[in-house]
Length: 254
Image 1 (tube, rainbow, N blue to C red):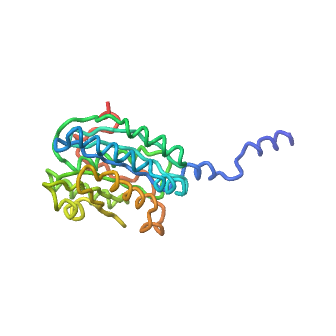
Image 2: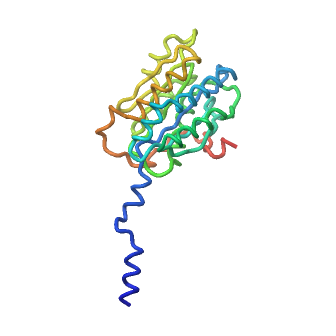
Image 3: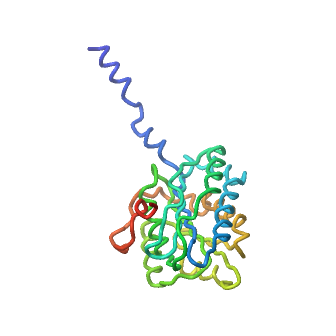
């Protein structure tokens, strides 16, 4: 009996929270890329390759490796209310090697959707659903929306943004200005971003996405403005008030 008791004790973890701590990371990050009708295939490729180059940057890889527990990232593609898709599912990054491999995956990510309107609120709602399926837990949850135009439904955008911020999600944005939207950065500041430390990074055109994405990733991963915040509870998003017509990430990616 004594030997059996010792065996059982050996099987019990000395620290029950150790396994949970291993699943704890610094950041859950959803990258939401605009694939509406205003984004042609060449411009989508510039978003895709620009994002891949940002992850290949040594400064970004170092920031990820230094983040406690690493980060988890997923990419979604957004457009109209019924046109939302999973670009790449959740991946946990915590070493330069895993980040480099992810950059290669991003570089070959296909465009899942063609055309559609600019329903920013639907992109945010879809990204929020992805946060609910993130692996482990994270101290911070961020939606990182990239786009080149204003929303087609301002009221629904305001409702979605405010709801997500109330639930502890930070929304940042990358404004791709181009010729027709020289005030898009100000628009995103006023109507899209929200939460403690939220910010907008500007790309003057699609060719500048790589540089802008690098700056945005570094700021999000390091989280300077949020370093003293308390941990956020996982999966506390209020889905009850989301549009019933919005499909789940799993079904929309098929």
